[in-house]
Image (cartoon, rainbow, N blue to C red):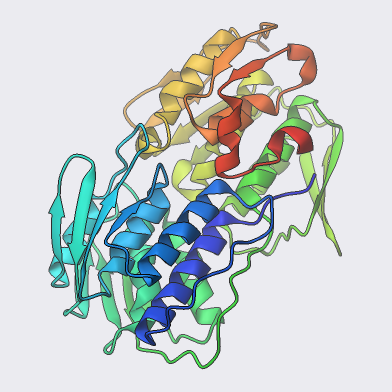
Length: 388
Protein backbone atom coordinates (compact mmCIF):
# COMPACT_ATOMS: atom_id res chain seq x y z
CA UNK A 1 0.00 0.00 0.00
CA UNK A 2 1.73 3.16 -1.21
CA UNK A 3 1.15 6.00 1.25
CA UNK A 4 1.11 9.75 0.61
CA UNK A 5 3.57 12.10 2.29
CA UNK A 6 2.72 13.15 5.83
CA UNK A 7 0.78 16.37 5.40
CA UNK A 8 1.45 17.45 9.00
CA UNK A 9 5.20 17.30 8.40
CA UNK A 10 4.98 18.80 4.91
CA UNK A 11 2.89 21.77 6.03
CA UNK A 12 5.18 22.48 8.97
CA UNK A 13 8.27 22.43 6.78
CA UNK A 14 6.54 24.62 4.21
CA UNK A 15 5.51 27.08 6.92
CA UNK A 16 9.02 27.29 8.35
CA UNK A 17 10.58 27.68 4.90
CA UNK A 18 8.16 30.45 4.01
CA UNK A 19 8.91 32.30 7.27
CA UNK A 20 12.66 32.05 6.58
CA UNK A 21 12.25 33.32 3.02
CA UNK A 22 10.09 36.23 4.18
CA UNK A 23 12.64 37.16 6.84
CA UNK A 24 15.34 37.26 4.13
CA UNK A 25 13.02 39.08 1.68
CA UNK A 26 13.38 36.14 -0.69
CA UNK A 27 10.24 35.86 -2.84
CA UNK A 28 11.31 32.69 -4.66
CA UNK A 29 8.21 30.59 -5.17
CA UNK A 30 7.89 26.98 -4.02
CA UNK A 31 7.70 24.33 -6.73
CA UNK A 32 4.55 22.22 -6.97
CA UNK A 33 5.44 18.63 -6.00
CA UNK A 34 4.74 15.47 -7.99
CA UNK A 35 1.36 13.81 -8.38
CA UNK A 36 -0.20 12.05 -5.39
CA UNK A 37 0.41 14.85 -2.90
CA UNK A 38 -2.61 15.53 -0.64
CA UNK A 39 -4.89 18.39 -1.64
CA UNK A 40 -4.28 20.07 1.72
CA UNK A 41 -0.55 20.33 0.93
CA UNK A 42 -1.26 21.74 -2.53
CA UNK A 43 -3.71 24.29 -1.13
CA UNK A 44 -1.23 25.51 1.44
CA UNK A 45 1.60 25.68 -1.10
CA UNK A 46 -0.59 27.74 -3.43
CA UNK A 47 -1.52 30.10 -0.58
CA UNK A 48 2.09 30.48 0.55
CA UNK A 49 3.17 31.34 -3.00
CA UNK A 50 0.38 33.92 -3.19
CA UNK A 51 1.68 35.49 0.02
CA UNK A 52 5.24 35.56 -1.31
CA UNK A 53 4.00 37.43 -4.40
CA UNK A 54 2.28 40.03 -2.22
CA UNK A 55 -1.36 38.96 -2.57
CA UNK A 56 -3.70 40.79 -0.22
CA UNK A 57 -6.65 38.33 -0.48
CA UNK A 58 -6.06 34.59 -0.05
CA UNK A 59 -8.66 31.80 -0.05
CA UNK A 60 -7.67 28.81 2.10
CA UNK A 61 -10.69 26.79 0.85
CA UNK A 62 -11.61 24.15 3.45
CA UNK A 63 -8.07 23.73 4.78
CA UNK A 64 -8.16 24.53 8.50
CA UNK A 65 -4.43 23.99 8.96
CA UNK A 66 -3.57 26.38 6.13
CA UNK A 67 -5.89 29.02 7.59
CA UNK A 68 -4.40 28.87 11.08
CA UNK A 69 -0.80 28.64 9.85
CA UNK A 70 -1.14 31.44 7.31
CA UNK A 71 -2.86 33.82 9.73
CA UNK A 72 0.36 33.65 11.74
CA UNK A 73 2.62 33.80 8.67
CA UNK A 74 0.82 36.90 7.40
CA UNK A 75 1.58 38.63 10.69
CA UNK A 76 5.24 38.77 9.64
CA UNK A 77 4.33 41.32 6.96
CA UNK A 78 3.75 45.02 7.46
CA UNK A 79 0.85 44.72 5.06
CA UNK A 80 -2.83 43.88 5.30
CA UNK A 81 -3.93 40.43 4.15
CA UNK A 82 -7.49 39.10 4.11
CA UNK A 83 -8.26 35.38 4.32
CA UNK A 84 -11.44 33.80 3.05
CA UNK A 85 -12.72 30.24 3.42
CA UNK A 86 -15.02 28.32 1.10
CA UNK A 87 -15.43 25.16 3.16
CA UNK A 88 -18.88 24.23 4.42
CA UNK A 89 -17.73 24.46 8.06
CA UNK A 90 -16.18 27.42 9.90
CA UNK A 91 -12.97 26.15 11.51
CA UNK A 92 -11.92 27.26 15.03
CA UNK A 93 -9.51 30.22 14.93
CA UNK A 94 -10.52 32.24 18.00
CA UNK A 95 -7.48 31.20 20.02
CA UNK A 96 -5.10 32.03 17.15
CA UNK A 97 -6.63 35.50 16.79
CA UNK A 98 -6.33 36.17 20.52
CA UNK A 99 -2.65 35.17 20.47
CA UNK A 100 -1.87 37.40 17.48
CA UNK A 101 -3.52 40.40 19.13
CA UNK A 102 -1.33 39.87 22.20
CA UNK A 103 1.69 40.10 19.92
CA UNK A 104 0.62 43.47 18.55
CA UNK A 105 -0.99 42.24 15.33
CA UNK A 106 -4.14 43.97 14.08
CA UNK A 107 -6.92 41.44 13.36
CA UNK A 108 -10.44 42.04 12.10
CA UNK A 109 -13.01 39.28 11.61
CA UNK A 110 -16.26 38.72 9.78
CA UNK A 111 -18.32 35.55 9.27
CA UNK A 112 -16.13 34.21 6.46
CA UNK A 113 -13.17 36.59 6.37
CA UNK A 114 -10.24 37.39 8.66
CA UNK A 115 -7.96 40.36 7.99
CA UNK A 116 -4.48 40.45 9.49
CA UNK A 117 -1.92 43.26 9.50
CA UNK A 118 1.51 42.83 11.07
CA UNK A 119 4.18 43.11 12.02
CA UNK A 120 4.59 41.15 15.24
CA UNK A 121 5.95 43.52 17.89
CA UNK A 122 5.83 41.33 21.00
CA UNK A 123 8.01 38.41 21.96
CA UNK A 124 5.91 36.83 24.73
CA UNK A 125 2.46 35.29 24.48
CA UNK A 126 0.16 33.37 26.82
CA UNK A 127 -2.51 31.42 25.00
CA UNK A 128 -4.96 28.55 25.22
CA UNK A 129 -5.24 25.52 22.96
CA UNK A 130 -8.57 23.99 23.92
CA UNK A 131 -9.97 23.59 20.38
CA UNK A 132 -6.78 23.07 18.36
CA UNK A 133 -3.03 23.27 18.87
CA UNK A 134 -2.15 24.33 15.32
CA UNK A 135 -1.80 28.03 16.17
CA UNK A 136 0.76 27.02 18.81
CA UNK A 137 2.77 25.12 16.20
CA UNK A 138 2.46 28.04 13.77
CA UNK A 139 3.89 30.48 16.32
CA UNK A 140 6.69 28.06 17.16
CA UNK A 141 7.58 27.77 13.48
CA UNK A 142 7.92 31.51 12.87
CA UNK A 143 9.67 32.14 16.22
CA UNK A 144 13.25 31.50 14.96
CA UNK A 145 12.79 34.24 12.33
CA UNK A 146 11.80 36.90 14.89
CA UNK A 147 14.62 39.17 16.16
CA UNK A 148 14.01 38.19 19.81
CA UNK A 149 12.52 34.79 19.17
CA UNK A 150 9.33 33.97 21.04
CA UNK A 151 8.30 32.86 24.51
CA UNK A 152 5.07 30.83 24.50
CA UNK A 153 3.10 29.85 27.58
CA UNK A 154 0.13 27.51 27.11
CA UNK A 155 -2.57 28.05 29.72
CA UNK A 156 -4.47 24.94 30.72
CA UNK A 157 -4.43 21.65 28.87
CA UNK A 158 -3.79 21.58 25.13
CA UNK A 159 -5.60 19.28 22.74
CA UNK A 160 -3.34 17.39 20.35
CA UNK A 161 -0.35 18.00 22.60
CA UNK A 162 1.72 15.41 20.69
CA UNK A 163 1.51 17.62 17.59
CA UNK A 164 3.12 20.47 19.53
CA UNK A 165 5.90 18.06 20.44
CA UNK A 166 6.18 17.10 16.78
CA UNK A 167 6.80 20.76 15.95
CA UNK A 168 9.38 21.10 18.74
CA UNK A 169 11.21 17.99 17.49
CA UNK A 170 11.25 19.36 13.95
CA UNK A 171 12.82 22.64 15.09
CA UNK A 172 15.32 20.87 17.32
CA UNK A 173 16.38 18.55 14.50
CA UNK A 174 17.01 21.62 12.32
CA UNK A 175 19.35 23.14 14.91
CA UNK A 176 17.00 25.46 16.83
CA UNK A 177 17.73 25.41 20.56
CA UNK A 178 14.17 25.09 21.87
CA UNK A 179 13.90 24.99 25.65
CA UNK A 180 10.69 24.00 27.35
CA UNK A 181 9.26 23.04 30.70
CA UNK A 182 5.77 21.52 30.78
CA UNK A 183 3.73 23.95 28.67
CA UNK A 184 6.27 26.77 28.55
CA UNK A 185 8.40 27.12 25.40
CA UNK A 186 11.31 29.47 24.75
CA UNK A 187 12.38 29.59 21.11
CA UNK A 188 15.34 31.87 20.30
CA UNK A 189 16.16 33.64 17.06
CA UNK A 190 18.04 31.31 14.74
CA UNK A 191 19.84 31.94 11.48
CA UNK A 192 19.27 29.21 8.90
CA UNK A 193 22.34 29.26 6.68
CA UNK A 194 20.96 27.04 3.92
CA UNK A 195 17.63 26.31 2.29
CA UNK A 196 15.58 23.84 4.30
CA UNK A 197 14.09 20.68 2.80
CA UNK A 198 10.37 20.63 2.00
CA UNK A 199 9.84 16.89 2.05
CA UNK A 200 8.20 14.51 4.45
CA UNK A 201 8.03 10.86 5.47
CA UNK A 202 5.16 8.51 4.67
CA UNK A 203 1.94 9.44 6.43
CA UNK A 204 1.04 7.56 9.62
CA UNK A 205 -2.58 8.82 9.72
CA UNK A 206 -3.12 7.29 6.27
CA UNK A 207 -1.32 4.10 7.31
CA UNK A 208 -3.78 3.50 10.14
CA UNK A 209 -6.50 2.67 7.61
CA UNK A 210 -4.38 -0.29 6.54
CA UNK A 211 -4.35 -1.44 10.18
CA UNK A 212 -8.14 -1.19 10.19
CA UNK A 213 -8.35 -3.16 6.93
CA UNK A 214 -6.23 -5.94 8.44
CA UNK A 215 -8.23 -5.95 11.70
CA UNK A 216 -11.58 -6.29 9.92
CA UNK A 217 -10.41 -8.89 7.41
CA UNK A 218 -10.24 -6.87 4.20
CA UNK A 219 -6.58 -7.94 3.97
CA UNK A 220 -4.73 -10.61 5.99
CA UNK A 221 -1.49 -8.67 5.61
CA UNK A 222 -0.30 -5.32 4.27
CA UNK A 223 3.11 -3.81 3.52
CA UNK A 224 3.58 -0.08 4.11
CA UNK A 225 6.77 1.19 2.42
CA UNK A 226 8.83 4.07 3.82
CA UNK A 227 6.98 3.98 7.15
CA UNK A 228 8.94 4.01 10.40
CA UNK A 229 7.99 2.99 13.93
CA UNK A 230 10.36 5.66 15.25
CA UNK A 231 8.52 8.47 13.50
CA UNK A 232 7.72 11.66 15.41
CA UNK A 233 4.19 11.60 13.99
CA UNK A 234 1.69 11.28 16.87
CA UNK A 235 -0.59 8.85 15.01
CA UNK A 236 2.20 6.27 15.37
CA UNK A 237 0.63 5.66 18.82
CA UNK A 238 -2.43 4.05 17.19
CA UNK A 239 -0.27 1.13 16.01
CA UNK A 240 0.22 0.18 19.67
CA UNK A 241 -3.55 0.16 20.16
CA UNK A 242 -4.04 -2.07 17.14
CA UNK A 243 -1.36 -4.32 18.60
CA UNK A 244 -3.67 -4.98 21.55
CA UNK A 245 -6.33 -5.99 19.02
CA UNK A 246 -4.15 -8.65 17.41
CA UNK A 247 -2.81 -6.54 14.55
CA UNK A 248 0.99 -6.78 14.67
CA UNK A 249 3.35 -4.41 12.90
CA UNK A 250 6.93 -5.36 12.16
CA UNK A 251 9.61 -2.91 11.09
CA UNK A 252 11.76 -3.86 8.10
CA UNK A 253 14.49 -1.99 6.27
CA UNK A 254 12.03 -0.67 3.70
CA UNK A 255 8.84 -0.20 5.70
CA UNK A 256 6.37 -1.92 8.00
CA UNK A 257 4.52 -5.23 7.61
CA UNK A 258 1.06 -5.27 9.17
CA UNK A 259 -0.61 -8.62 9.79
CA UNK A 260 -3.45 -10.16 11.76
CA UNK A 261 -2.22 -12.56 14.43
CA UNK A 262 -5.67 -14.05 14.98
CA UNK A 263 -5.67 -13.09 18.66
CA UNK A 264 -8.93 -13.45 20.60
CA UNK A 265 -10.49 -10.02 21.18
CA UNK A 266 -13.69 -11.17 22.92
CA UNK A 267 -12.56 -9.97 26.34
CA UNK A 268 -10.61 -6.92 25.24
CA UNK A 269 -11.64 -3.57 26.73
CA UNK A 270 -9.86 -0.65 25.08
CA UNK A 271 -9.60 2.84 26.61
CA UNK A 272 -8.18 5.61 24.42
CA UNK A 273 -7.46 9.30 24.98
CA UNK A 274 -8.34 10.94 21.65
CA UNK A 275 -5.76 13.70 22.21
CA UNK A 276 -2.93 11.21 21.67
CA UNK A 277 -3.94 10.23 18.13
CA UNK A 278 -6.92 12.34 16.99
CA UNK A 279 -6.74 11.50 13.29
CA UNK A 280 -6.81 7.76 14.05
CA UNK A 281 -10.10 7.83 15.94
CA UNK A 282 -12.36 7.16 12.89
CA UNK A 283 -10.56 3.96 11.76
CA UNK A 284 -10.24 2.80 15.36
CA UNK A 285 -13.92 3.34 16.11
CA UNK A 286 -15.18 1.75 12.89
CA UNK A 287 -12.77 -1.16 13.07
CA UNK A 288 -13.45 -2.00 16.72
CA UNK A 289 -17.21 -1.56 16.40
CA UNK A 290 -17.45 -3.85 13.37
CA UNK A 291 -15.35 -6.47 15.19
CA UNK A 292 -17.50 -6.18 18.33
CA UNK A 293 -14.66 -4.97 20.56
CA UNK A 294 -15.56 -3.05 23.70
CA UNK A 295 -14.06 0.45 23.87
CA UNK A 296 -14.23 3.86 25.50
CA UNK A 297 -12.65 6.93 23.93
CA UNK A 298 -12.28 10.11 26.00
CA UNK A 299 -11.64 13.78 25.13
CA UNK A 300 -13.58 13.54 21.88
CA UNK A 301 -15.49 16.82 21.93
CA UNK A 302 -13.09 18.78 19.72
CA UNK A 303 -13.46 16.12 17.01
CA UNK A 304 -16.86 17.68 16.34
CA UNK A 305 -15.04 20.69 14.81
CA UNK A 306 -13.18 18.83 12.05
CA UNK A 307 -14.20 18.61 8.38
CA UNK A 308 -17.42 17.16 9.77
CA UNK A 309 -18.80 16.58 13.22
CA UNK A 310 -16.82 13.35 13.32
CA UNK A 311 -18.63 11.92 16.34
CA UNK A 312 -22.05 12.39 14.70
CA UNK A 313 -20.72 11.08 11.38
CA UNK A 314 -19.38 7.93 13.05
CA UNK A 315 -22.65 7.39 14.92
CA UNK A 316 -24.71 7.83 11.77
CA UNK A 317 -22.46 5.68 9.61
CA UNK A 318 -22.29 2.81 12.09
CA UNK A 319 -26.05 2.92 12.61
CA UNK A 320 -26.40 2.20 8.87
CA UNK A 321 -24.43 -0.99 9.58
CA UNK A 322 -26.74 -1.91 12.47
CA UNK A 323 -24.20 -0.89 15.12
CA UNK A 324 -24.95 1.63 17.85
CA UNK A 325 -22.26 3.52 19.74
CA UNK A 326 -23.00 5.87 22.64
CA UNK A 327 -21.69 9.42 22.79
CA UNK A 328 -21.67 11.89 25.68
CA UNK A 329 -20.27 15.41 26.02
CA UNK A 330 -16.64 14.36 25.74
CA UNK A 331 -16.55 10.58 25.15
CA UNK A 332 -17.84 7.77 22.99
CA UNK A 333 -18.26 4.14 23.99
CA UNK A 334 -19.28 0.76 22.62
CA UNK A 335 -20.22 -2.17 24.82
CA UNK A 336 -21.62 -5.02 22.73
CA UNK A 337 -23.48 -7.87 24.38
CA UNK A 338 -22.19 -10.00 21.55
CA UNK A 339 -20.50 -9.54 18.20
CA UNK A 340 -22.86 -7.44 16.07
CA UNK A 341 -24.48 -8.69 12.90
CA UNK A 342 -23.26 -6.13 10.41
CA UNK A 343 -25.75 -4.99 7.78
CA UNK A 344 -24.85 -5.60 4.15
CA UNK A 345 -25.07 -3.05 1.34
CA UNK A 346 -25.25 0.14 3.42
CA UNK A 347 -24.88 3.60 1.88
CA UNK A 348 -22.85 5.85 4.15
CA UNK A 349 -22.48 9.61 3.75
CA UNK A 350 -18.89 10.77 4.27
CA UNK A 351 -20.18 14.26 5.11
CA UNK A 352 -17.33 15.71 3.06
CA UNK A 353 -14.83 14.29 5.57
CA UNK A 354 -11.87 12.39 4.17
CA UNK A 355 -11.24 10.39 7.34
CA UNK A 356 -14.86 9.29 7.62
CA UNK A 357 -14.86 8.17 3.96
CA UNK A 358 -11.67 6.15 4.45
CA UNK A 359 -12.78 4.64 7.77
CA UNK A 360 -15.81 3.03 6.12
CA UNK A 361 -13.99 2.46 2.82
CA UNK A 362 -11.38 0.28 4.54
CA UNK A 363 -13.99 -2.32 5.57
CA UNK A 364 -14.18 -5.66 3.71
CA UNK A 365 -15.61 -5.67 0.18
CA UNK A 366 -18.16 -8.35 1.10
CA UNK A 367 -20.03 -5.81 3.23
CA UNK A 368 -20.97 -4.03 0.00
CA UNK A 369 -20.63 -0.55 1.49
CA UNK A 370 -21.21 2.45 -0.76
CA UNK A 371 -19.48 5.61 0.44
CA UNK A 372 -21.30 8.74 -0.70
CA UNK A 373 -18.90 11.61 -1.46
CA UNK A 374 -15.90 9.28 -1.65
CA UNK A 375 -13.87 11.79 -3.69
CA UNK A 376 -13.17 13.82 -0.53
CA UNK A 377 -10.28 11.47 0.31
CA UNK A 378 -8.07 13.58 -1.99
CA UNK A 379 -7.68 15.99 0.91
CA UNK A 380 -5.13 13.68 2.55
CA UNK A 381 -4.82 10.44 0.51
CA UNK A 382 -5.62 11.00 -3.20
CA UNK A 383 -4.90 7.38 -4.25
CA UNK A 384 -6.76 5.75 -1.34
CA UNK A 385 -9.36 3.86 -3.39
CA UNK A 386 -6.67 2.28 -5.58
CA UNK A 387 -4.34 1.48 -2.70
CA UNK A 388 -6.84 0.05 -0.22
